[in-house]
Structure formats: structure tokens, C-alpha cells
Image (tube, rainbow, N blue to C red; front, side, top):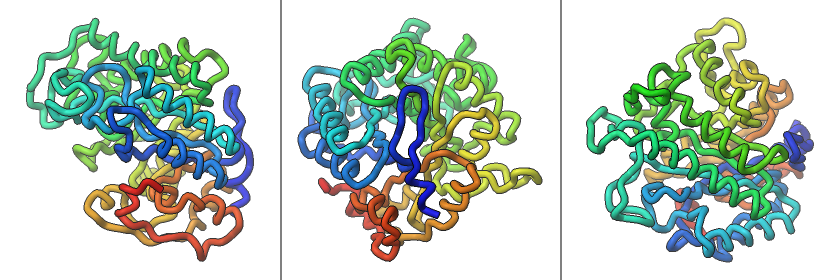
Length: 368
């Protein structure tokens, strides 16, 4: 059943050799924001081992407060862009495809951190996730520059020869903060109900499309849960999810990357029909767009347990294969299993399931 994983997939002007996506995993290995030869080798090694599409670790855009760590890679500036140019070259030489993940941490940033420690943090309303007002709400002009910052980075991706871009709209970072009513209390076009709170992301998608042209796919990553609140839900019914996601579909997104902590969990178990669909399954059903599923693929432990120093054991892939055979989603993003073992996809393709490795939390800091 693993054959389904290794069939090509085409979207817009791109054909990906198989359905395996390397999930974005930020490691902080780019001093002063510059990805070096070690970063290029890291991605090349996965491309050499049958990963069809690599989505890079989060790369921060050119707003001064976009990063909370000076070792996170930048997607602006001559030195950083030269580093990403080498990543593209090396991944392509190995037969892979690659997309940068464009990222802004928003209010997840602690004051005094990142590439510009003296900068203010960006946010929808200057509110924390508990609703405390700590900064003034940004002006319309400031919000417009946040939008255009994503587009400027998208333009860099096009110029460098990347195959697609991914916009990070998940996990409680800036775009997701605009979605979240707790943090977005704006009274202009960016605030209001869930659809209105999605306007910021829609504008980013439209401006990125102008920057990359008509042939380059745009992937949008979203989640219900937040790092600040695992139980948070933007849409608690399929109808609300449909209205929310159609904002992105109408804006011109090509693929929805649907982040769950565990891919096998059903999104709306109370629904009698389609009760077993996960978030990617519902997103595909409701929008008709291709979707990527993600969340503890190949492992039995949750991603955030890794930050608590916990490992995870290799788990059966049978359920993943069954869901793919049924067409529930189109691609699968693999994170920690690929971080632990660059040959993960090669082993799966060869049916060498007994060789799949357990995940050690130490892998999060490896140069491998």
C-alpha cells in the first residue's frame, strides 16, 4: 500500500515526484540568519532519499520584529538569500523540489530577541493570548507593510528558483493571531467574525501571487490548535470551517497544509457522515483543494513532547496508507521521523519498515 506515497503529484506548474513532504522544522542553525553549507547539506540528504517536496524550516520575513531568535534563518538580505540559493541548487541536484516557509512569529516573540532586539513585536491588536493590552494596535499602514513583507519574500523565492512557497498561518504565530478572536480585536476590515479575521491572510496570498506569478504553487499552512492553547478551535463545525477555508480558496491558494498534532484524530467526530475524516480530509472535501496531512506521522508520540525531552517509538503506517488509498488527502508531511532518519522515505519505499528508527529528542539539535 506504500505505492500510493510514491506516485507523482501535479499542482499548478509543478510536478512533485511523490507524495512525501518534509515538514518544516526550525532548528536555529543559521547564525545571524544565514543558512550555511550544513543547512544545504541537511536538505540535500533528504532529497537524495526520495522526499518529493521539502518545505524548509520557518524563514523569517523582513519586518524587524519577525523573529525571536537570531539563529533563525532570514529570507531577506544578500548573505541569507545566497545561502538559500545554495539550498535550491543542492536539492535540485538531488532530484527534489523545495519551498521556503515564510514566517513571522508575531506576539510569540519576547521583547529584546531576534535579529533586531530593539524592534517592537507585530500583532493584530497589541494583545497577548490572554487578552492583555501590551502594545498599541498597529495602524492600517503597518498592517499593509506586514502583508507586503510576505510578498517581498515570495518574490525572492521566485528569483532564487524555488518550486513553490508555503505561508505559515498556523500554531499561534502572526497570521494565526489575526484568526484568533482573543488576540484580534480590530474593528476594521481585518476584525470581526472568523471570515473577516481571515482577510489578512487572504491579502497575503493575493500579494504573494502577484510576486510569484501564475506558475508557482502557493501552499497555506493552518491549524485549529495554538501553541498558546492546544484546545483552541477556530471552527467547531464543518460549516464554519468551510466558510473560513473558502476565503483562502477565493484568494488563490493552491494547497492547504492542515496541521494536527496527531494526523489520525478525527476533526468532527460528532458528525455521523464523514465522521472519520481528519482535518486534511475535511479541508479537501469542503474546498476541493489538494491537501497535505501532518501530525506525528510514523511515530506514536506528540511533537511537543520532544521539547520536553521525550522520544517516540516508530509506529505502523498502515492507517496512513489506508487513508491515502481512499483519497482522504493528497500528500503527507513527515517531520520528526525524517529529522531522526534522512533515509526514512527510502526505507518506506523499499518496504524496510523494520528498519524505521525510534525518535530521540536529541535529534532536534543534530547537524545530520
